[in-house]
Length: 166
Image (cartoon, rainbow, N blue to C red; front, side, top):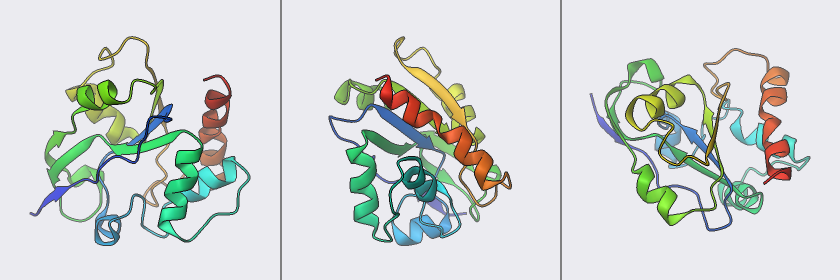
């Protein structure tokens, strides 16, 4: 098995919402892009939530979410895994969330893109790291999750409501 490393966070001082995945899949790692698999619905969902035309350019996608005060990172910094399935993740080492939250104190809400991100965060970090943070688990945007797109979009629409209140 190969040791895999996640990407640096997409974040700046304006970020209010942090969306956490587990670990980039094979295609995302190859492209060096968060949610790079063409069938992953992450970017499609976020652009649709804000009624914007999705860009095919990765840098434009990143600029778009940052303009909406949304940050992206992964719970796992390093792990071993064959293929892209979260179920195959072994020997995970989590990212340094204490340092991240200290560097970006405006983060108010942490959303988990799927169960593996949520369970790994719960196991290794816990929800008491900062008492004012709000945590919410979302259905994974991964193509491995077969929930209908419309259901995912409806569930993810909480982002728009959360931003209105932040």
